[in-house]
Image 1 (spheres, rainbow, N blue to C red):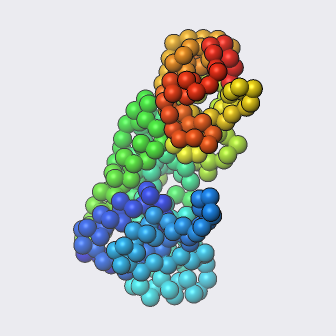
Image 2 (image 1 turned 180 degrees about the vertical axis):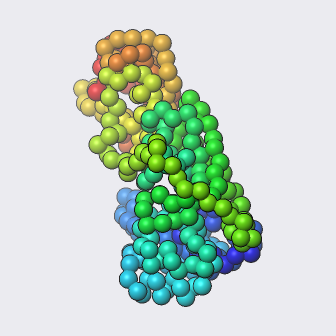
Image 3 (image 1 turned 90 degrees about the horizontal axis):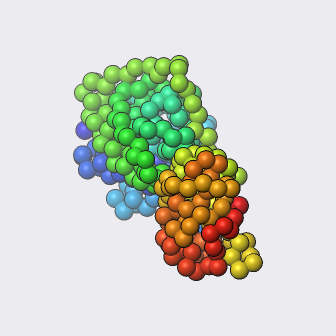
Length: 309
């Protein structure tokens, strides 16, 4: 068994932490992002990893930065054989990468070198990729540039949302990382350099790109919707009883029909795109909970021929 320092923050990281604990590895400490204001009251909320580590009685650290000799000294004090990083959210400088006896292993949710960066799950779906996966790599100073040790592939189903893919990859990745750590403990982990061809970057999602552009082809609109579902959510505006209302599209499918982009074509919430149409299966009206497309229409005065923007 290995002595590990674990670094992670969101829900995606939790299955890996649990698998490492379940396999009997010694988790000397957990590093995670500091509590952040959240919710209507803006009370500080601990990260999912923070809460899980505390429930397991694992020491938790929330440094704002890992730069400087104090950060290096603190990590070295835990004497880790391996540092495991899963969606931590802070950059690890070279001095930190040099601390563990073996190396720092990172779990990344893409088939590198495609989709290096912050939002690989969303970007893969938004770009219409048919396949993605998880990879364990040895960390180096560059952004997701390190050599890869192990990988698992998964098909992206035609109507799979980012949330669904996230959950599948979190479980798959946890198993992959456990196998990688076990191999490392036997000095049996082998690495290969990433190729130079096919490098793409998964930029952090921006609020400005969540608005649906109905002038795009139906497939692109569908991919945009599912790639941003459930969060932050692709949105449009509908005029309901004379007032503009913001609506998130949570789930969609390709549909028959054509018309001026943004036009409501039928009572099943089929909407015309630049070419073809999409049907909205689930939506969330501003200030309300998620509902089916039919439930949404029944609470409005919208009729076929109305336009969404």
